[in-house]
Length: 512
Image: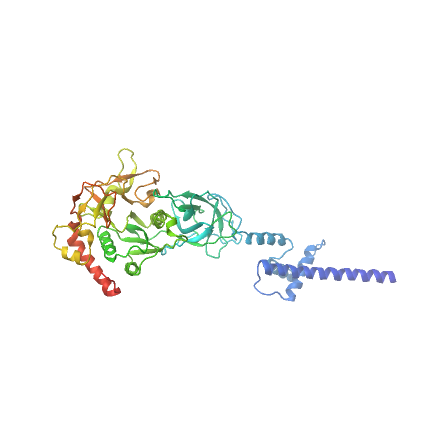
């Protein structure tokens, strides 16, 4: 009898130990869920006992009926995602969430990717987003690598990101994280690096390039991060810029504006003249715009004519060619894909002047829809040849009705008619391009067309690029001659420029 009681007592103790073990296991599972997954509410002791009963039933080797109460407990357990078998999965998810870039381990080239590749089931948006104001600002990728902008290219189903890299640059492996929101863990793809050719004037510590990030077909990331394999976590998040209306016929891109440029009259003359010849959008990169110039540009921006983009270099400006000109012209051109029909690249002191009263858009429409007879390629760009006009010499003796107004408002382009010889193609020339024809571009030439496109050199008797120089330029060569072409437009242009200057003076207190 004593032996029986002892045996019974031991059996009860074992059962109590098992019960305590099951309850402790339930508490541990709940703790793990709170830590790794989060719970909508704190579980009660009833929930704990319910989970314990289900776990006990699952661990039992004896089959038994599942009543209504047990079904509820199973549902509770599934909702909390806390089976013993899920602990390994939770640990794996934890490792992925703490990975270098906090993104799922989906690292594949191109579009070879499952639709169900997100751990949380929140794939990228499948609706093409509307166009928003352009966003670009320099953010860090690596110690000496910076990313500026992200542009979606519909034809390639790809996001093109502009990066600044050290020179010389040893190629590294880039990774892109495609996101539907800033907080989205994202999807990883391998980025393909493309060098933008350096300037051809001097050596610098930095240059630029692109990281091309393939995007799965019919998906549209809202944000993107770029990193290298040597970085533990992404240091940047860029909004992806998409094309869309309103569309422009001709966008004009200027290099970075800096503190050396302070001439309001020349700026307004350049803008109003370009508008007269067909430009309907101007893009400026703001490195350090002086106050008076900034007020003028902001007024044009409020009217929808100018777009200002921040361009604060993360290193001294002398460490890259001309405030990063190669980077800004590429960013400007590719940002106009699906936005502008044509893009003109020129400086503020340059005016493309048609010999006949025709807009540059009409000129481009007439030429760029034809083929090169020798190669049968479509013309994808116009090259305007350069002539220098000297502003440092005496004013012209040529008389025209608006000359007094031009002198009063310092419209120097109308007052100087002595010019150099016409420089040959590719020598200080400037380009008007179709954005979809460009692969790589340089300041004065097309570095590389995409397949099927060719260059058209505009004849001097059709149009010339007037380059107005305030100081002697050793490349302005003779024979010199008088050119009154621009004065032909004075009766139309000078009143417009005068009105604009007076409006700016009255509204903003601009000194003219």
